[in-house]
Length: 281
Ligand SMILES: O=C(O)C(=O)C[C@]1(C(=O)O)C=C[C@@H](O)C=C1
Image (cartoon, rainbow, N blue to C red; front, side, top):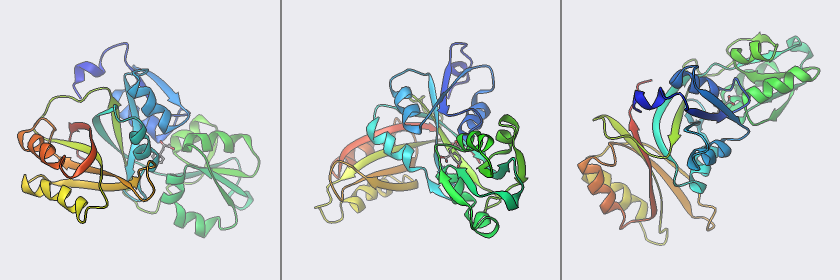
C-alpha cells in the first residue's frame, strides 16, 4: 500500500473489537497511532464496512500458523465479493491466561476459537476441568473475565493491562513462533510492485471430472506459484465449494492476466479479491 494513502488525516481503520484484540494490534503495527480506529463486533462487520466504504481500511485475520484459516473471514468474502485486499501484515501472537484469580480457583475460561486452538495443549494440562466458552475476540474475553468471579481469558498481555487483569500464565501457546497473518482491505488494490501476491475466489462445476485440477493446471502452464489453497461450503448449493487460491503475482502482471483469462473456462464466478505486496514474516 502506498505510504501517501496511509498518511492522510481523515483515514479510518476498522477492526474486530473491542480495543486490544490482535486485529487492533495488527492495525496499529501497520498504521501507527495517529488514525481514527473503529471497533466492530464481528469480522463480517469489518469486511462489510470496508466494502461499503464506511471506513477507509479494514483489518481482518486470514490465517494462523498453528491453527490454520480464519473461516469467518473466508465466508465473509463470499458475501462481499467487491471488497479488495490492499496489503498483508504478519503479527507474532502470544496467548496468555489472564484472570483476577489464581490458577486453582479458575472454573471458566473465555476466548476466541482461534486462541483456544492455539493454546489447547496448555489448557488440557493445566485447566482440564474449567469450561471453555467461545466469544467473538480475545479482548471481549478479557472484558468478560474482568467482570466475573473465578473466570479467566486466553488473551494477550496488552489486554491484561487494558482490562486490569493479572497474567496468571505467560505464553501458553503451543507453537513458540505462533503468527497470524492479517489482510488490510479497501475498495481497490495498488499497482504492481514486482513482488506481489493475489487471492482468487471461485467455484468449479463439480459434475466435470477433474475441474479443480484443470483450473489449477493453468497456473503451472504460466509458471505461477500457488502459496495457499482453502475451500469453504459455497452456501448456495449443497456439497458445492468455494475455493480460495493465493498465487504469486499481480493481476495486472502479463502471465497472471493471461492465466486469469484461461482459467475462466474451468471456473464459475471467478473473483480476484485483490493483489498486494508480498511481506516477509
Ligand atoms: O480475538 C482477537 O484478538 C482477534 O483479533 C481474532 C484472532 C483470529 O480470529 O485469528 C486474531 C488473531 C489470533 O490468531 C486470535 C484471534
